[in-house]
Length: 88
Image (cartoon, rainbow, N blue to C red; front, side, top):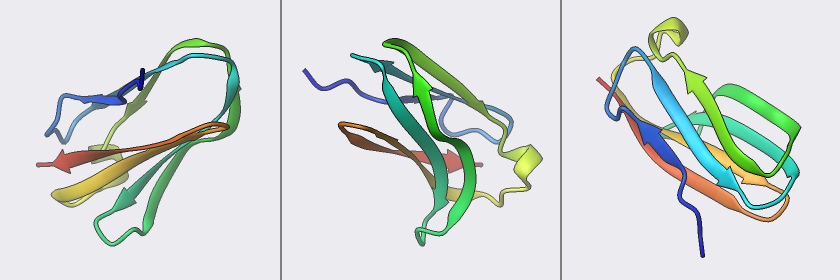
């Protein structure tokens, strides 16, 4: 069964919490891209994480992000997930 990456609250401009359950220990990268696919922020880069719940916090206002559509991209050794996020 596929696990969904969750982002909440969405939309937001103060804080986004990204959560995802890893079925096994593996390397994980988490980035933020804009609507044109341009890299905005690297949150994790090839970090090794144990199996279980993964949670990361992102603060759009601290990154001076303009209002609009962004995407969180999570890549592990076995899968890639993309989740839309709106900065208001």
